[in-house]
Image (cartoon, rainbow, N blue to C red; front, side, top):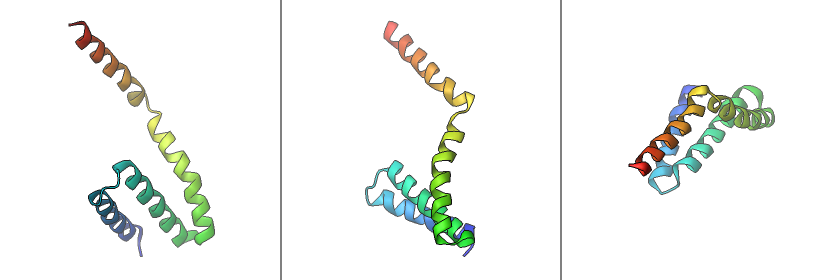
Amino acid sequence: MTPFDIGLIMTGVLLLLVIIGVRVAFAAAFVGIVGMIAIFSMRLGFERGVMTAAKMAGTIPHSKSVTYALSVLPTFILIGFLATMRA
């Protein structure tokens, strides 16, 4: 099974979880970690795949969310909120 096949299966699982009522954040987190475990286990073996996926699961969200644009966005939302309260 290729990583592309795993991605397609995990997309289907994500849609299924959302349809049955699981919150999107929890469904996406579950599917993401299971997908990473599947991909890394395919190449490294199950035990090393689980450990690698667990380490990357904490690293990837942090590295993607510490960009300048995402740090400025809440400030603009606050400014817009304060502007609507004043008017």
